[in-house]
Image 1 (cartoon, rainbow, N blue to C red):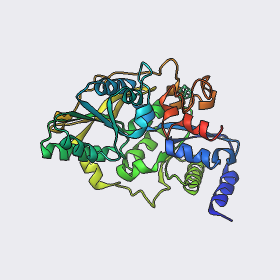
Image 2: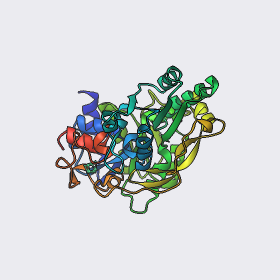
Image 3: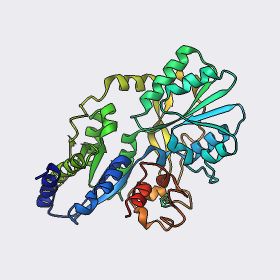
Length: 350
Ligand code: SF4
């Protein structure tokens, strides 16, 4: 018998009542749907797809800021590929600006931006930096190198977000239906276990650090259900092959040196206390100020992504799903991103 089948049988055997679990990461959502795990679990188990897609949660105001910068003739605007199709408040995206002549470039690694700035001293080079604690260390490294090199034409539009604060806010909502959490393994490879130990204890929910393969997801679900069935609520690491208790020490030191937490709006969710990063001195001289930091932001009228990201609406329950909103014509970020829940539902025919 395969390990996945054995894990699935154990899940069926130990489940005695309805439970609602949330997988945090969009990569986990895609893997769960791709492997059909959501269909194979006992009917008592409900999976809620959490807010763990950095493209989906980047504030609309930050996208608008990037669009305004990209439209300036002396600016080269750089970001990761997924960001080019995220619509701003007026429906435009960076890809359409590029088609109209703006200099918008896709980069593979943040240090490429430094090389670009050094090759083009006559232009302003702006990096729209997005992602969770997984990609923030590479942005921190860019900031360190840029400052050391003394480049004067490189600026960072920082839209990095932090996972633990948003989980804290979601689990603290009295209407939150989530009873157990599958934490994103890749974030924990950087951040370690400590902040999740605290969350599990304060919110009295089991939190299980979980990987991304079918077996790793099933192992995480089984560990979470075992705790729920036994009335326990603690942090458990079901992804020990990649995550150790302290995370990646070098990356955490770099994050601490370059960034500081700041209240940040998440698209569709509003302001999250300490939910993002901003550059701290002396690296803040590279920063483009973000007027949306400290403010709140709600879902756009045409895209109820906030409800999807909180697990209150399934993507295929959205009135626009598959009709007005498709991967070719996305109305909201969750349909754009390769990690978005709406794109996952569309791709895997749910
Ligand atoms: S289907 Fe489209 S409009 Fe509906 S929530 Fe998803 S991204 Fe937004």
